Image (cartoon, rainbow, N blue to C red):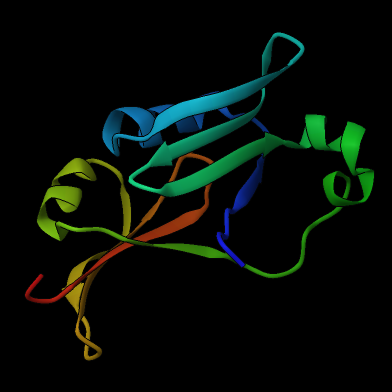
Length: 127
């Protein structure tokens, strides 16, 4: 295996873009329309890739995934080089767990992005 890339299934992509592009510095490298809206995007920064796809576009491709609830929960856990700089970028975001140090040697902050997904940003303590 070479890479794991999450695909976040959402109703709308546009509300999520300011979080990733403007706030977190990701670049949109690919997109696919779904009518007059975005149906799919790939966002990239420093080798990390995240994909978003709308339920509407998924329904045309894999209806079983689009038309029901998807069991389970996922938290994106992203390793960053500077947790303070990342925490500053997250000012005003929906913070679930404020910046903290763990017993396992990590500093981390958990937020909810605009589509409701939980994202944890983490760095080694003493980075």
